[in-house]
Image 1 (cartoon, rainbow over the protein chains, first blue to last red):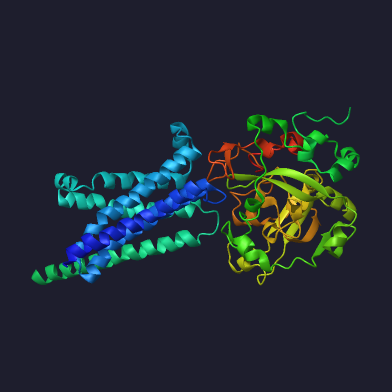
Image 2: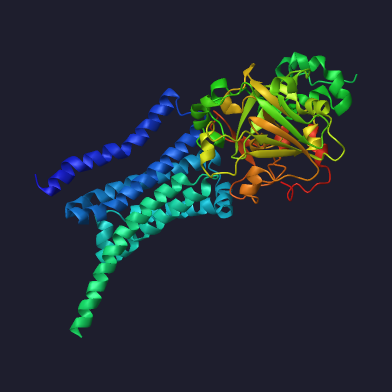
Length: 209
Length: 299
């Protein structure tokens, strides 16, 4: 099998199974009534954590692809990103329905008043922008360069999600810090090679002059 | 007739027999009616559904950071806490000072059964049938002096038994306190049981503070020291985040926590939120403690 076939026939189905697992677990919990003492909190927390985890995996695709020199891994990036966004949407809907009975004025007030809600909501808007521009047609329409630049917003979105997590915990920041460190490593994994590349390019330019 | 009771509340649901038998004693001292101890009629009228939170939820969904910050961690890690024998030290401006076994401390004080709403500052709530004593009864027995304006409660400090104390999440030991008039209020309890069973360790065994009109964090658990003080002591959450947790910690839907609203709460097990009531629905009983006080500044 070629690399492309491995990705398409094995890794992609694995991504689907892995990404649907938390949803399946929640549906099972709803059906048998086993979501713990505070079911809404379980739903909110699990969907939020799944969105963040999958988002970090999405951000891991490019560094791993470069490290292993397996360009076809890029095929996993879009489904992963869309799953992350889907969990974020469900996360928001649970909040909107059960915390605010879909009242737009109430939700707007909550977003405006509480910074951690604001950053979470902003992250959702950013991810939504990326989701709607994810089809191949959108890449063609925007042009690869502009599309790439637009999709760099994912770094900002992920950072906002970490902030959202940090600001919502009462006192024990262990968990959000752990996720934040992973995001930091993933961002460095991009920043350092990029820096090296630009240094090299700069050096080459200096030599040439 | 001195004792009035709204007809829609069965007495059996709100007060235990022991309290009922002793009603005259505290009625005269506190000047409140028996109806005052019930879940107020207003709260019932709102939905008529202050149903008891099941025992397994009360005992497995806990904030007790000494045993871990996850809600399920106290139930998992509190088993090793040795609560017998238990010594309590009484200090400060009080006649009966010294260290005393818990059983001796409580001797002669009538037991009461009370069902209270419990509102956490995190905007969830429960309804819990407690067993214990009225804090005021103990204070009278200890005979505080005239300079005693505050009562402070300190939780056990023992990282060997309380693994959460190895972490720096909060400053240990956990300290909570009340003004003496709050402590003397007949709604304020020291509890030793839930659902007629001894208090499980994760709920603060062997003895904890239960003040139903305040957020749950005011209820110090596994108490080893009671101090009578002239000046207001610093309390643990207030030290950790003074802008988020005040000294009084009264349930107040009109004063938001800086990071979230306190207007509504989720009763555990329910999906939609319900309005939070002033003083957790005990405004008729405790409101007069705070007459003239700016509750926005003193939260």
